Image 1 (cartoon, chains in turn yellow, red):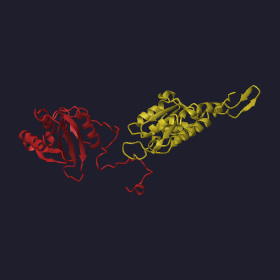
Image 2 (cartoon, chains in turn green, orange):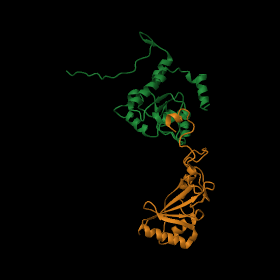
Image 3 (tube, rainbow over the protein chains, first blue to last red):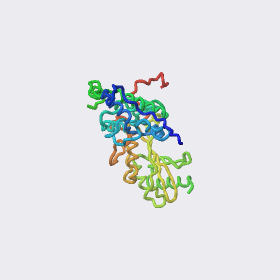
Image 4 (spheres, rainbow over the protein chains, first blue to last red):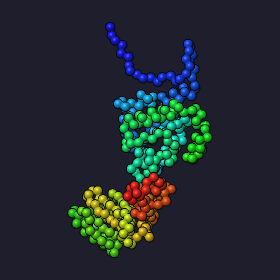
Length: 185
Length: 169
């Protein structure tokens, strides 16, 4: 008689709610948040060495697919998460901004590594001193480059934001004011 | 051909054609270098291109440099020419003042000089008169200065979180 080995797989648990025979009631934003957080489609905007580290993050050892993000989107129209990885030259700035603007709401931004977050070692006339000068950023991952574990941690931080985001956050005056600050209205 | 012999040949050829246009010639860091008059650079490059024996028909590179301490000759543009069949290489140099950074373009002879001259305009503000499309090539078009000139700082000027006490500037 063979033993059936149950795989040790941790699946996402159902949100808090009221359960009874034949029904389950919960809040819609909890369900939406759970679904969004575990099916993020990242757009990799990789310009240098951080992009190489991201490849390791995507590959089998670290496997970003475990977090529901194995499907990279190379079209901004279908992406939820913009991952900016690497040095952004000032001349690249308008391109990055256009990619961000082409993404559909709701959208999140992860800035990976010292260069994307602050210009890094490139304190020079030709390099953008942090992408938050042109687009809003949700999570910064420090490092030069960060290890894949750090990137995974950054993704998990994004997931927390996504999970707990109110459905109406993008309609709030604060959010609109932020867009105006970035000249995106 | 030995480098010394090449230098002498080119120098004699240029002196016969341009006379006072040749200012000096030397072997510098194992490389024949000839300093010439700025106004004649395009004619000299064309002459060396068309000369049957020398036939410098390949422009390896051209580059500008800035020496602020060298009064009256703050800028230099260097042209590196190559004769591919015979594997001969020489370097031409022109010096000029920062108050008048205008140089004749060599694009009529070498189309390859188009982007190189644009680059030197972008970084040093050297104006190549007669260039068909003299505008910035690498930096942002709204940049207001020429960043490789020594009077401008290398660092990005918009940062507020870094100051001299932290970085010893």
